[in-house]
Image (cartoon, rainbow, N blue to C red; front, top):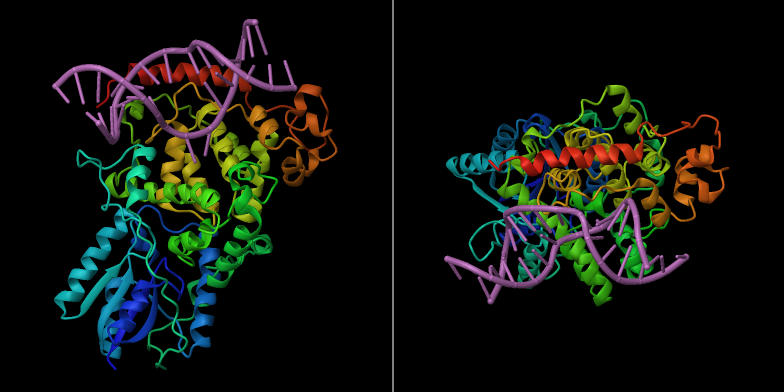
Length: 467
DNA sequence: TAGCTCGTTGGACAA
DNA sequence: TTTGTCCAACGAGCT
């Protein structure tokens, strides 16, 4: 049987794996391969928390390959060189992989595909990560969408659920590639074990992904519409890191949630945002670096001192819901989505820091850090992006806290200094004047005054001419 | 073409 | 305590 390289990237799974299936269908003997090439990620090399996740996900993939008689070959980049070398060494006739959609990577992969084909190899890429690829939908004018609702209206009518693709039970045995290194050699796991706490909450890998999905569809999906807004509850799917690393495909999730059509549609719509984010990133590849709305290019962002940014980063702003979120992020590598909006609004509106400060911190600390979602989310909250909220919408973190953490449980959990403060006063302890040891006596900015400042700064945008 | 409707996630204030 | 109204404008996308 001829050999084919199956190049694993952000698709670290064996089920529903179109690149692997292509190899099997084509009558090839699949050689699983992962290439470590951080310098090829452009301005956004994988952040620390994501690396820690990736380490464990690779271990999980390698373990399930070994159970099936194979193994994951790990090579160091550059990717193009590694692929050509590996193909030559094992006489592979083909290379198959699943597509990624980051602009830098799309460009790189197109070059690699050309080069492989130029060398006489069969090189093919597949969609294994999205329900609709970015170029599959366009508005009736033939433009990319800039507003979610019309995007999803069109996209959701075009969804065609493919049949499941089960993993093969056995792989043919292969000899390891000579240049292969071990997963540990990549040094993705942190030297100082700051990630220890993560793994009480998360199990990277395909099995962990399916366990998370099962838990979600059994317990939380029915209440998803309401419960997802309450950070103290387990109301969200917590599938984002698994999706980011491709340990599970959106179609696998979609198949599973069909059992509850109504709740399933609401959740599917959230997956739709992921599709939309990739659509926007593909068509507006400069948005990780630049405002989508150029009217903001002269926006008077505040020159926020590092000390203040650090207070935000480490949950010492004196606003309990903000601090709780930032500490949850630091401790677990993840933050509840409602709280992400609150901390992002606080940073970009109350502190009026440029959204890139927030995007950079999330990039480094989130286990689900994803260029499309991170960019869309930060630009959306900041008001600079697609579908942005009207300028007068500035989250009041105290009201948000009262509304979405009414019993103050989330705050008590992540800001234990405040656990002894009566629940009702926990949202804004400075009002009752409760002196609490170790917790800031007052917020680092006056919430009301900074809100007015932000609104004033927005006047600037309204006057700005679109470029 | 021109007009129409609508926009993930809000807040302040009045009644 | 709850509910309604306004904030204010614009451009995307459709018909």
